[in-house]
Image 1 (cartoon, rainbow over the protein chains, first blue to last red):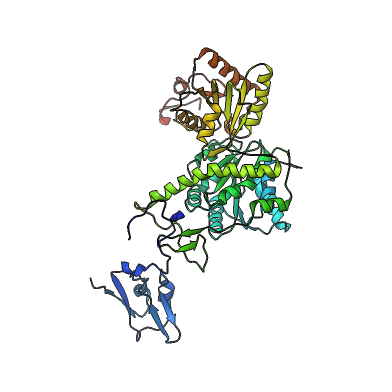
Image 2: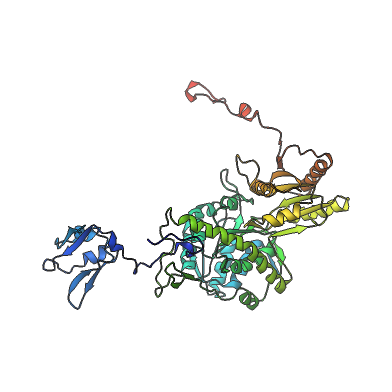
Amino acid sequence: MSEEKSWREIPMGGLTWLNSIEYKTGEWRSFRPVVDHNKCTRCMQCVIFCPDIAIKYKPDVNMIEINLDHCKGCGVCAEECPVHAITMVKEKD
Amino acid sequence: MMGMNGDTACAYAVKQCNPEVVAAYPITPQTIIVEVFSEYVANGEVTTEFIPVESEHSAMSTSIGAAAAGARAYTASASQGLALMYEMLYIASGLRLPIVMTCVNRALSAPINIHGDHSDAMGARDSGWIQLYCENSQEAYDTVIQAWRIAEHKDVLLPVMVNIDGFILSHTLENVAVLPDDAVKKFIGEKKIPVVKKPNGELTPYVLHPDYPVSMGAIDLQDYYFEHKRQQAEAMKHALRVIKEVGEEYGGLTGRRYGLIDPYMMNDAELAIVVMGSTAGTAKYVADLMRSKGVKAGVLRVRSFRPFPRDEIVKALSKVKACAVLDRSMSFGSYGGPLFVEIRSSFCYECQKPIMINYYYGLGGRDTPPHLLEDVFYDLKKIAETGKTGEEIRYLGLRDDREADNYKAELISFKDLNEGKIGGR
């Protein structure tokens, strides 16, 4: 974070620096979900379960896509995938 | 001119203000506000979205959501209901949402009591809400209208609690002069959305809107929470000025001017009663009575308790010889009631100050008739003449107020229930 500011310089009510689109929470991740598109049945369970709405279904390519700018690597998608098409891989240091 | 009780007067004022959202849950003695307002909604006299919620916690949560989305939101509560709102009160003020609420002051359980005292609002004293206390139904009507202007002022942006005494005001019929609908509409104006500067220099409207995504009240740890609280303190400071400005402007419209305090016969007063709410009316009557007997009596009614108008109170009381501060709520274990403690500390570094005593009065709606307030003035007279303060903390209208050292010995003993008969059973 940048240099700490005084109470005169910050917006009221705890309004955040950036909004939830601009703030790249993916930087927190230590494990990355990797999708095996051959195993994936497009059942959308991961889309529903993702707590960050970071997984989207792309109809044009008929594939799910994970937004790594916002995925925090919680692993819920890998846990819920009924065909084990998602694996959590350790991020490189 | 309309015959209205305090609750109806509030509901009528809200009707004329036509807020986008009213979310409320009925509780005695506030029920009439919700009841009457729901009739306005049913009759199509307002365009308000009326949300009958399942609890006061939800009433305040709904108001917060509505206000955050840019709507004018109103709610009303009392006593246990206000207590149930407690955590949400801090969120409303911390998010700087200009919600208006009427609190129909009522005692808190236990033992259960539905009548008027200030215990409920005093429990929310430090919640960051502006607190205005009304003397009569006319003021209740006037203050609900002014409250929007105070709350939504760009230097304030804080929620406002309009306090009226349970039953004494809420259920008592009174003549109330009302403004035409369009005059109220013009006075409060359209709600404006504040635009704030983010630390990266960008401007953004402070509202939940899909075109301008923001997060409000996100986690704020050791690094910034303190700064945000300092901003709230600053907003309260500005509210001192804004309450007066709005009260003056309203006075220009109606002839009824309002400020932070309401001094009565205080110019040359030697003895004074300081009080909030409806009891001020009785006190003013008694002050007239004392004046007719040659006693220089006065009354200082505190209208704004939060923000606390320290300078104005000191100015109004500094030349008084003796004054009695009347508290209608208890802070158990404190040395004096909340109003007394603050007024006394306001005088801490003043050279010229009156002798001050504190009376607890009217708890649970205990009647405070004129003769009790006459007694207060006679007590003050004695104190001013002798210079002896005597007991500083007193009880007004309480049976047998002698020292209570033997209370426990008389009423409580311990005995094992298995040891034998207790009390003849």
